[in-house]
Structure formats: C-alpha cells, structure tokens
Image 1 (tube, rainbow, N blue to C red):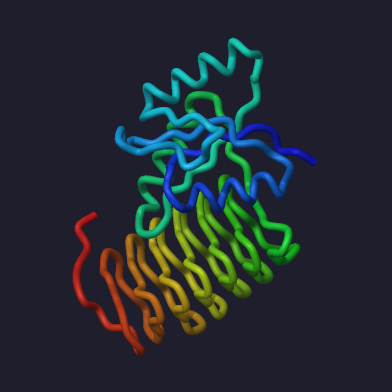
Image 2: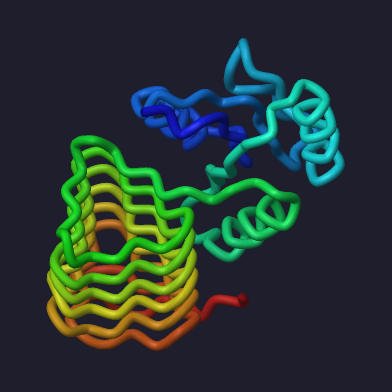
Length: 221
C-alpha cells in the first residue's frame, strides 16, 4: 500500500537510495530540497528547490494542487545526524509527516521499537528489545542486535555490527563494517571509523579507528 508522496531533503547519493526504497513501497518523490544552489536534481523527472524558501515554494504549489498529505524524508547521512534531525524538525513544523521506512528485506524483531523518521535499508536487522531514537539510519546489511539503545540521529553504516546490549548516543556515526562488542557504551557525536573493532566504552565527541579502536582526535560539535 502506498505511503503517499514524499519530499526528500538532500540531493546527493542517498537520495537515490531513498527513491528506490520509496518506489518499492509504492510511493512517489514529489520534490527534492537542498541548500546547495549549484546542485541539480538527481532525478530528471523531479524538481529541486533550495532551502527553506524553496520548501515553502513547493508546499504552496502542492496545496494549490490539493496535494494535502506529503511526508518528509532526509537524505543526509554520515556524521551529520544533527543536521538530519534539524531538517526533519523543520519539515514537520511546516506540516509534513515523518514516517518510518523499512525495506522489505530488512528484519525487525517484534519487540523492537523504531523512532519517527527511522530508515532501515535492505538486509538490515534489528534484534529483540532494541530501541532506536528518531531519525536514525540503518544502512544495508547492518546489524543492531538485541537490547541495543540508539539515540536520535544515529547512522549505522553498511555492514556494521552492534553485537548486543550496546548504547549509542545522539548523532553518532558507526562506520562501515565496524564491530561494537557486547555491552559497550558509545557517547554522543562519536565517529567510529570503517572496519574498527570497539572493545571498550567511548566518551562523547571523539573519532576512533582501528582494531582495537583507539581515539585519534576530539570533535568540535
């Protein structure tokens, strides 16, 4: 069953992933929004609008054409969870809905809880009693096993594994093919580099890499 029309904020690569998912779910991309005035629409059949002013312009047109139910999805990934959250909140303030998007090939435990605006992409897994905050992204093939708790705006990259009973703070990014061992706590605004193995708790606001992962720098957030 269709989930209606969507506006995608963000006109780069992840927008293409989201459009494929939305069409698989029977929905349509009505517009793309981006702050980069030099960026062209990633789709030949979908108009791009720029920033908050452009979003207002699109919404005026949509209401004139009696398209009264439009949902928001944000194609801003990586360590930009705070920006992704702000875009969702702005779009929702203007009356757009925020819906959970789950690829048909993903597996979600019955006892798992997904926050508003969560994106679960192809082949991802969410285990029993796990809780995801609003506006998270679980990329293709990622695993969030049982009893994990993710804050707002967290992004789990392709192939990353959270092995169970793990906490991840707001806006953190877990890089591709990294592994977080059971029971670890990852702070807010953390970047875990691709392929890293996290064997201990990680404080907020740092970037870590390696196996075992070690701190390489503080982040200004």
